[in-house]
Amino acid sequence: LLAAAAVGDGVSVAALLAAGADAAQRDGEGRTALTAAAAAGHAGVIEVLLPGSGDGLEQALALACQGGHSGVIDRLLKAELRAGGAERDWAGLLEGAAKGGHGAAVRLLASRMPEGPSFGKWCRAGAAAARGAGAEDVAVFLEGEARREGETGSGRERGEDEEGGVALGGAGAGEVSGATAALGGRRFPKVRCDAMEELPQVLRMMAWEPRAWPVVLQDVAPGHESAEVRLSGEPVRTAILRVGDEIPGTGCVVEKLRRRRLYEDAAETVLRNASELHFRSLATGEVFRAAPGEPVLSKESTVRLRVVGVEREWSAVVGDEFRLGSLLLRVAAMERGALTLENRLTRETGQVRLEVAPAPLSPGPGQGSVPP
Image 1 (cartoon, helix red, strand yellow):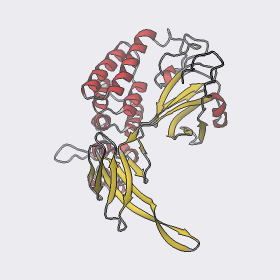
Image 2: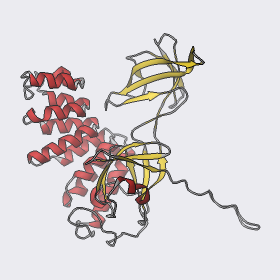
Image 3: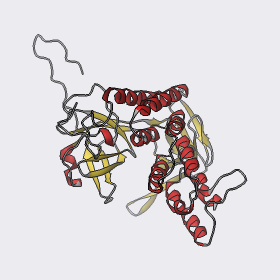
Image 4: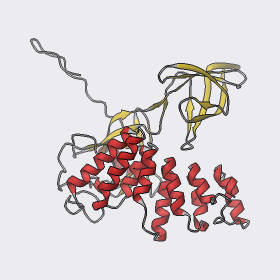
């Protein structure tokens, strides 16, 4: 059961449990199937194991935070809430995610942590841990959270209602934020939005802020035995990699190489641009696909969003959740032209298209240049 859980084989895990395997049993290192799955980032297996997992939720949650597995963190937090678990070590969980530079996990924890005097202290400690580990973007986010909490105080003083939304007539509703605000349900404006088809009229995608892995595929050898990859870091260099090799400087391993056959006019032709390289992050278990000459975008890419009628912007990453009107939404996917949102209750999806900013006007006669 431990072996199946560690590699994410949910079918085998379910079969073993049905046959009488004990999910609460520990190995010689003190691991359970739940902690093995949490450490490896297998969120689907977590769901199967939770009913018989015993008292290992807190250890599994700590391991998931250290690995930045936001899907696992989400499920374990909800399981502890249902079970009425003991007081949670928010400071330790946040510090574990921050040290690893796991932005999505840190945002998720910050949105779930209870408000109060300790919130700012936890955020500042997490920011210090992130900065010590070189994760500057995570440190800046947490410092902003601590600063906003200190400025706004309790939810009642911010004009929040019983459900955690900010009424449009409340404090700061019409102000333009100097920097992008953090995504969090308790700070999100309350607006009327009761159906997925209303999203394009209520929400605007203002910017696409991609983060790319330094992996650019050149080509896969005809026999699939190796791939030529350009590493676009400093310095730029080329490497020849095989399945199982770790990509230098990325913490990722090559999982699959292939060349697809394309058919033209009933004649089989193998084209160079049909090559693909799949690689997996050892830290999060996420799999990415590289095509020749194209940058591989990280799931840490962000979009900038704005609610219509509320001049306030914030950044979001894949996996973030928020409430908009009566909808509980999750950022399911993002790309250059559109953002895909999922309704967590009905599993419906909807898209918000990128709003292209108008080009600056050309200067008239006698006027200076217009800044871009």
